Image (cartoon, rainbow over all chains, first blue to last red; front, side):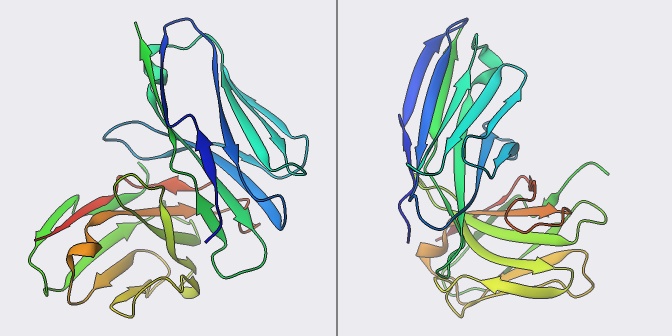
Length: 113
Length: 116
């Protein structure tokens, strides 16, 4: 099983603050990197699918970058709002091996009004 | 269509019993995935269908687990002779885009299984 790490595990920020999290994955056999937002008692929601080194994606106040050579992706939230409170998951899709996708354990974000 | 639905949302069973979960994907989505999430972990891939064909199955999956998608629409996941270690959230997702692994997956709310 491949090692996909997310940091930090959790964080609390004040409303209006900007924040970022990291997803680290093996740099070999990269295929795609997915980001999800998972609010409590709701379904995980797809944010981004990233496939190319140097990819940058943006959706409203949320953006993500991808570095496949060094094996990491950053998720940024600008001007955090209470509704951004959720767990943010990354999923690493890869070629080779028998388990084609490995999820990180998530970063739990709490935005304090 | 309101999205992916799963039934039941919660299931409590005794060890040794069989359980079956159902997933109804978004209409016309040809791909369907099953995942399992245990406490403190990220979701773990279980299996994947393209239409009615089961194309991938995790080697981590015990032979007590079986999944079907008989008509390429809804899917069922059955666990036979449940064990306490099967207690988890079982998630279903569907997608329709062409490239496997780069498709946007739409998740259901999950079925939480508790094995006593």
